[in-house]
Amino acid sequence: MIKRIGVLTSGGDAPGMNAAIRAVTRKGIRTGMEVYGIGHGYKGLIDGDMRLMNIAHVGDIIHRGGTVLKTARCEEFKTDKGIDKAVENINKAKLDSIITIGGDGTLKGALELVKKGINVQFIPATIDNDLGYCAYSIGFDTAVNTVVNAVNGIRETGMSHDKTTIIEVMGRNCGDIALMSGLAGGADAVLIPEVKSDIDKIIDKIKEGISRQKKNSIIIRAEGADISTEELTEEIKKGIGEDVRTVILGYLQRGGSPTALDRNMATLMGSEAVRLISEDKPSTAIGFDGQNVTLVDLKKADNIENKVRADLLELVMTLA
Image 1 (tube, rainbow, N blue to C red):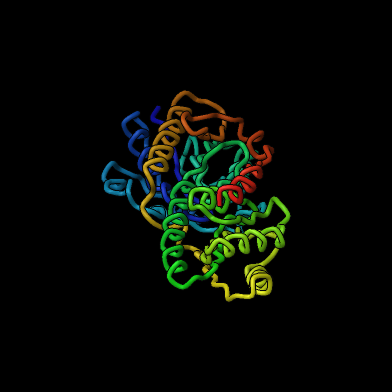
Image 2 (cartoon, rainbow, N blue to C red):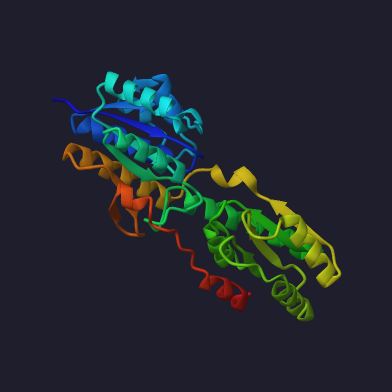
């Protein structure tokens, strides 16, 4: 019998989601499956928002940010009634498996479907990179490159005005974007949620730069750090006796054309999801270790703690 699969994107959008949708759709169709695109994530499952996909539906999207299937956060799916309605629609559409693309909330949603007997293949897509079972999630590399490009421009204007600048980046409770963009962008200091901030040490570092005629320090703060951007700004102002600029990059980090790494990861993981379904494999969390696709039991994946390379904080300051 022809296998019928559904694919959805849920939670925050991430550059590279479209590349994953493209891979799932085309690999699925060319493997002899019927592929149904589900609109607006888990909300689409509850509402029965599904359409049969063809090759043309995913043409010219590999380079585009966002998601052609749309995405949403769905509070109703967190209720028993919402989950039951979603399962009812899956069974009504006779879908053999669901491929979910998203972050930690999407993973938890996938587990709820598994409890109801639905086969689910999970693909990680979140700029936060906060899923502990895999090294890279779709969208993270693009977000880091977006921040680094912003740092480059901010540094140039900072040099013109001799200003210290604090740049706030996204990541919720994970400091990966701040840490990796700080390392790549030559920041003077980075503040992340996982490590207590040492403001005095940061002020001393800025003063050291000033003593050698460097007056344009860059400080990158993750949004979940233990001191707010406003408080940090005031502390540094008092510490160095000079004005400090602040830049909040916000949703800029979620947009833009995905990097080659994000496109290739998404393509490999999307294709792997289809293979797992074609071979009747159990529900799996698909990941990427920097070179290869990795596979982890879906339930185990949710229990693997995310670990940050906190040792790189010291390296950032050493090299500044």
